[in-house]
Amino acid sequence: MGVWMKRASLVMLPLLMLPFGVLGQNYTLDPQHSYVEWHIDHFGFSTPSGKWMANGKLVYDEKNLQNSKVEAKINVADIVTAIPELDKHLKSKLFFDVAEFPTATFVSNKVEVKDNQINKVLGNLTLRGVIKPVVLDVKFNKKGPSPISDKETVGFSAKTTLKRSDFGINTLLPGLSDNVELNIEVEAN
Image 1 (cartoon, rainbow, N blue to C red):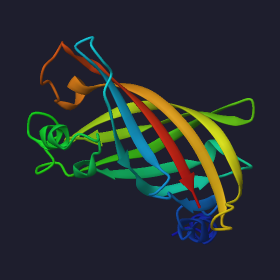
Image 2: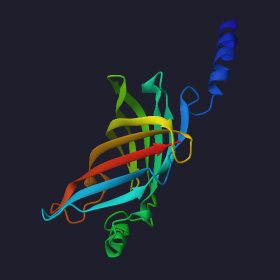
Image 3: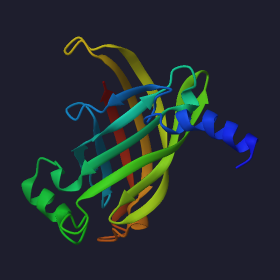
Image 4: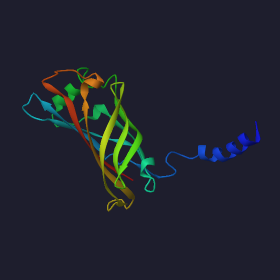
C-alpha cells in the first residue's frame, strides 16, 4: 500500500466509524404522534380514510438540511379505519395481504431545500414487497422542547399521492380510485 493510500485510510477510517446521522441530530419517531393517514375516493360517493402509526428514526441536520434523512416503518396489520369489518377486509389478500407483507417502509435518499427549509423528501417506499420511488412534500413545523416530555423535539407534516396499482393493489379498480392521498405527521425526539 502506497503512502498516499495509508494517509487516506487514516483520514477515512474515523469517518467510516461514525454512527447514523452523527453530523446531524438523531431523533426517534414518537409512535404516539407519528402516523400515515390515507384517503381514497370510494366510487365517487365518499372519501374514506384510515391510519397507521409509524416508528423509525430521523436525522435533522440544521446546518446542512440536505443531509437530513428519515427511515420509517408501519405495521400494516395495525390499520385503523374505525370500521372493524373494513379493517379485516383491507388486511386480506385483496388489499394489503398482511399475512405475507406485514410491514411497509420508507427510506429517504435525498432531501431538497427551498427558502432554508426542507421542501421535499425523496425516497423508496416498500409496500406489498414492491419498491417504488416516492416524493413527499414536506413542511417543517417546529423544533424545541416538548412541553410533555421536556425532550428536544422536531415536527414535520408531509403529503403525497400514490397509485395503489403500482404496489399490486388492484381490487375494485377503477371504481375505487387508483390514487391514494397520504397525509403524514411526525413528532420525533
